[in-house]
Image (cartoon, rainbow, N blue to C red; front, side, top):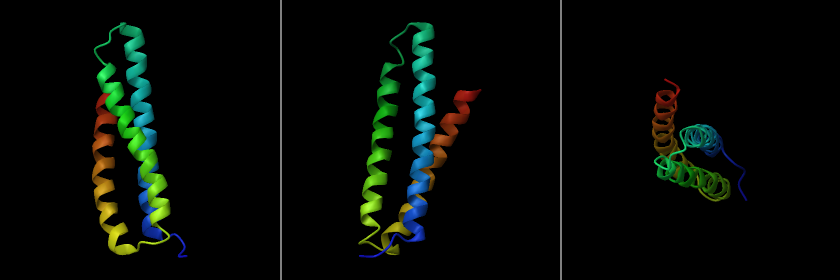
Length: 97
């Protein structure tokens, strides 16, 4: 069994940051729903929750993949996950304004 490489660890860290941002975004929307007493934002909360679930599952699978799959998979995933993280950062920053 191989040990987890730096590339897989980088992917997992990116996904954990993504999950933290998503949890914050969900909390923001839930507070807004409670304050406004409107169900208009419920689909956005559901959508964000699904992304959070995807992030949690990704961490689990990336950890398992790290023992069997090498840099040929983990390096391209860093690019893909970084783009996803950038999009959540933009969403997070736009919510703070």
